[in-house]
Length: 96
Image 1: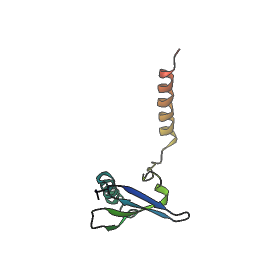
Image 2: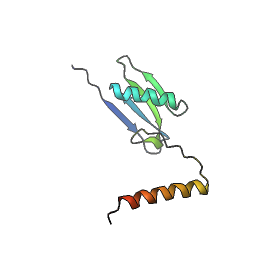
Image 3: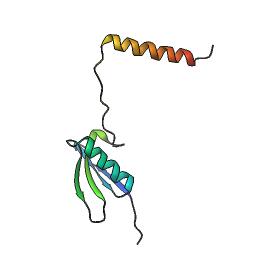
Image 4: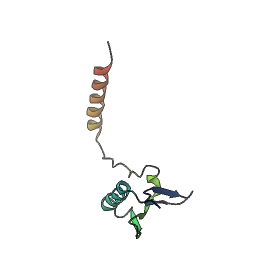
């Protein structure tokens, strides 16, 4: 039988985590990188003999396996500067 490299997701309703069985190189590398960046959230449960990984992620990261974005607290002055910059960009794109 040929070597099949696939990635499978398993999520159960109500669980606080979902699991991934990763056999393709890109998905294994992604799982390992996320484990390095988020060691408290990502758990590599087992590395199988065939090299595939069984990994546990928080359910809030499903379906794209993306950690939540970090938001910085901003002052009202910073918000106004950003809003003005966005408004200027939109005005520049609009046809006259």
